[in-house]
Structures are given as C-alpha cells and as structure tokens.
Image (tube, rainbow, N blue to C red; front, side, top):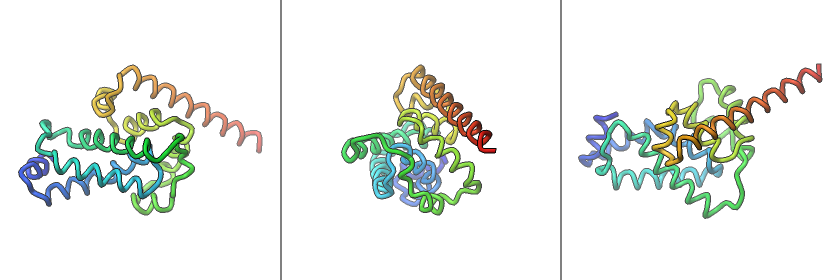
Length: 179
C-alpha cells in the first residue's frame, strides 16, 4: 500500500484508483454507521476521494493512508448528516439487499447479526465499535481518526458492549420462554 501511496503522491492516477478500490468496502462500512441513504453514502465516499486526491501530497505517514481517508470520510458524513438529517438514523433503514450485493460478504449472517445489534447504539457507539471490531483499530488509532478523547472511546466501547450484552440476554430469555 505504501508503494501505491508514493506513486499517487507523484500524480499516478492509477495508483490512487487502486487505493480507492482496496479501501472502498471499509469506507462504505464506516459511512454506513452515520448515514443510511445509499446516494448520500456514495456522495460521502466520492467527496472523500476528491479531497484525498487533491491533498494526498500532504499525507506524511504513508502507513496511515486508511486512517487518513477514514478521518476525511467521517467529516464528510457528518457534514451530510447535519445538512440532511434531523434525528439519529436507525439501521432498520438499511437497504440490506443492496448492501449485501455491494459488499459480497462471505459470512453475511454474522454481518447482519452485527448490524442488527448496532441499531441499539447511538452514532458514537456505532462508529467506535465498527472501527474497533470490524476495522481492528486500537483505541489510540481511533483517537487519531475521530479526534475523540481515549476515555470517551473506552466509555463508548463499554456502553456499547453492555447494551449488546443486555440485548442478547433479552433475546435469549425470550427464546427460552417460547420453548
């Protein structure tokens, strides 16, 4: 990836396109934690790519290309969210069929279970959980990406885990009663 970044910084459009292709699925997942409308997600990703292309020469640490792109994406998603949405968005609004086709997940059942659990969380919790578990970033890396305090990130993770645990226990108990 670093070699592609070096080429892209020298103006190689194909190298930049390859970076976009490699990271598009991850960017989509992140955007989906903030906005649900497919057109808005595409706009956020496209705006991210335009800004990244214009300013890739400013990227100092080539190893952090993904973090850098996610930071830009989060800012674009927040701008779209503030402009278009008045309330927090439910994951129920997902167009799951389109999402499944677009991402071609190998284990779609686990992903759907993960997203159904996410709908119980607020935006910060969804974002932090996605970055931590799906993208496998450390708390320090999430801090760099989101500009959140590490304590806030840890609190979000703690609350999100508890909400998921309570939700899963509730579902388990409900199934037990039905039997």
